[in-house]
Amino acid sequence: MTRFLSEVLEAPEPMFRLGLQHLEKASQHPNTDIRFSTEVMQASKAKLRELGLDKHDTTAEELYHALEARVAADDKRLERKLRTLAATHISAEADVNDGMLKMLADVASESPAAYGMKTSVLKSLLKKQQPKKAMKQLGYRSLDSMLKHEPATQVLAAAWLTEATAWRQRFMEQYRKLQPSDFESRKLIIEQPRAARWAKLTAKALEDTRHTVLSFKELGALIVLPIPSHAPQGSVTATASLALHELNEIKAGSTFLKLCQVRGDFGVIVQTVALAQPQLSAHQLDQSVPWHIIQRFYARMEHLFSEELFAPHIDLSDMHWHSVEELLAKIEPSFEFWQSTPHLGFLHAGQAVSMNLVDAALNYCNDLPFEHRVRSSFQQSMWHELLMRYLQPATVEQTVLAQLQPAYAKQAIMA
Image 1 (cartoon, rainbow, N blue to C red):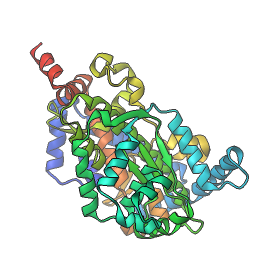
Image 2: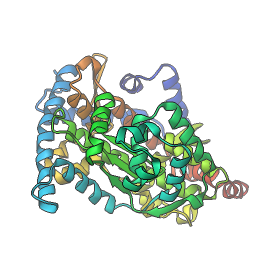
Image 3: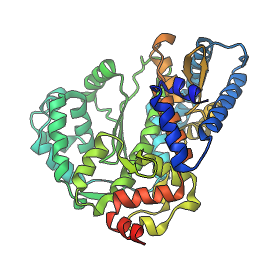
Image 4: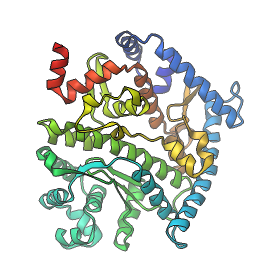
């Protein structure tokens, strides 16, 4: 069973097998990898039956094309539902982009407040490191004029799409000096730049990078580029699933920053959250654990959440985590097929196929051949799901104490 996991994860051996053995011993959860592998294979075979495929006689490539067909049909249904959502709640002239924003706003309204950088602070950082290429692309002669007519979050998004890597590095270096007083609790920001002056920049960004979603966890902000009328099929599902995924990441980053307000290196932590998923060192497991796994752990097992451990900065409501597939299924029931599939994969003759919706949508809308298929979202989800199986309440609590509240951790250890 460990071989199945190593092959679908494309993990190096024998290090992967030895690592799992260490996790088994450290967590005192024997045969977790075997149970998890069996669960994944059984669930994947069930999905094959739903697709009308023979679980005993289906190749990896046959499954890949069946998933493409499934995404194609679901994408058309989702686009129709989003257009209907827009027409019902906005206006008869509203389009799929309006429906997308309405859906995301509804999801965000059910989440706890974000902990993000104040707008005044963001503007100050932009003035110190002016995005001249972005200003030129959008037709502004001065940054003051740009900030007067464009939301600061969209100015940063424009900079991210146009400025060189060196500019990004210089801008992010400013984060190291930030303090908790530079942040505030407020609603999640969800915006879509649709002004006429953005048209050329957006078109170029989509052509060059195919990115439709920009996430700024330190701002508590999500920027969704409008889907053009000539976009390839599957773009609606790809954009919706990526945007909903990023809302989870933003909420996890927000919770982590709120919890780290007491840290003297707060600015460095802000920089880490902005650039990557913050990692916590779990000494009991002898490896790092991404913070969002801790968040998912408590979202899934609410009864284990300790108010004393996290007070006064966060409470259980901050540990919110939604299922992307379940949210889409509420809008379009056909997406029920994708529920519980983020960590599912199928292996045949040494070839792995992802059943993750994000991977499937990206494969379809980019018209990728089987040999160039994407499976990174599935592999990450599978590894994180497996890691969660090894977590125990005591391990999680000590990890949080040691990394975020060192003084309390010392007291707990001495006790």
